[in-house]
Length: 477
Image (tube, rainbow, N blue to C red):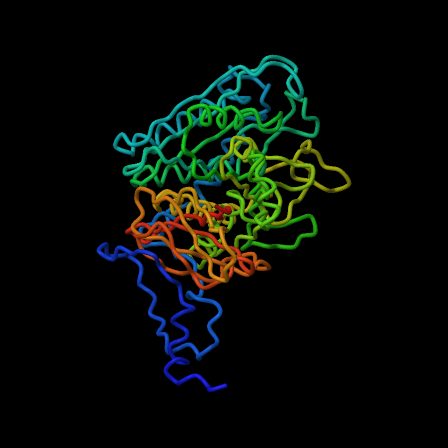
């Protein structure tokens, strides 16, 4: 056989690079275009088009926000919540000094104080309802959430939620009178929501952010359940929800200190997956690319850096064994949600009576919290919340063409408001994180020279400011 000419060999890589159907280049992008020259690839060896995937780093504005998070403020919030003695959901609701009612009123006043600094952009709501007796409630009980809503300046209909629960418990979950300080579980999470609300009230995110302190978590996720149902009933466009629950200390029972690590828990196959998509997800291997996992992967990307001084450890599980959290009702409502929890827990300091046994202090006391660690978890949360709120919405109806057998892959999606371009990301099926990115411009479809049989794809939106959405997993068209 006659060997191919040199010109054919040197031009062959062009056939393997991403093939874009259409592209509008009239809109300048805030991120630099790919500068990889075709000649930089050895001839006949291109099998993986695109460039290596790199994380999104905080902008100067976000860096300023994160720098304002104060360990001193976090300590003061936790100490104040502990001072109410117990915050059991069925504890006193009328005393000004003890019980969940006193905590509720103080939280409401603090959030209102933050709102006064927002020039009218933040509103605070006391969201209350009566939960009938049953389960861990011995009587009909008032459940109150404090919701501070910072209205989006560009896309107010797009919503991001960050929460912590302000109720607490001791060893007996039905004991409504004994002290239950709840410093780690979960004054630490509430402190992060409050500190972010205080700081971000002075800024103008593109999308709406809700900073929430919920009640009734220990008795059955009641407050978060009511909030999630209310949003779902209103057909609210909640793009992401994070809860911080037990984020107060990096030191476990074995005294090992993981002071620069925070776990994020995410759900695999969605609770409310449709009967059409559930079997398809299993068939095509999409169990690790649910909206929840995509949100957690996005969190890892934007929040594991030198500014937060933290590493986000992604746990492929909805929650720890025998435990649950306030992200679960949001997952049930069909929203992308995830949970932050410290890396190694000390179970002597949660769900315990305040008592000394055999020389060991039990109880969830402030002395076992690391306020600098909590502030770093706050930076992780703040980086994720702000990046999501200021990026564009997720591309809609992302599909991959399966109409014919081919070694190329064609993806299609619906454009969204706020996006000036789109990117296709991909990774080998055995990889937990994206490894490559292909910039395709302001288009609604693209064909790339990578086989869909061998990799996992995602499509994400890019805003003019450089922020990017979480990647959306494509289902077969």
